[in-house]
Length: 160
Image (cartoon, rainbow, N blue to C red; front, side):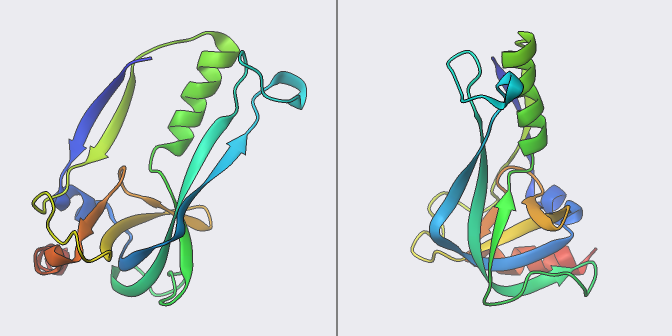
């Protein structure tokens, strides 16, 4: 299966976000939820491998911006964040293994505006999130900036 990537800029991520938070990676920083696709619910096999849904863990430090006041992540609490494309990826996985459909996939990938290595010593990140059911997902995979980008992010958010 091939993969085509479309870049998403800081400006796009800021305009799509329903909430923007400052957060630190949790411990562990992610977990994988295994989803069985085997017909009849049997154990995974080489022919029908489980799908691995990755949930990223972060501890919210503060809310920088939000569209609404209720249902927001709470400062000091840990949240799990889905990949922006997990539902699409799950559908593609099922089509490949259950139907034999093997096509090129299209993904959006966040392109950080911060310079490579900028803010590397500070684990805090600015996360651009969208509501997903009762939880959260990145607005694109993986929409995060180092805390050093806060002035640029706040400027963009102020213009929304």
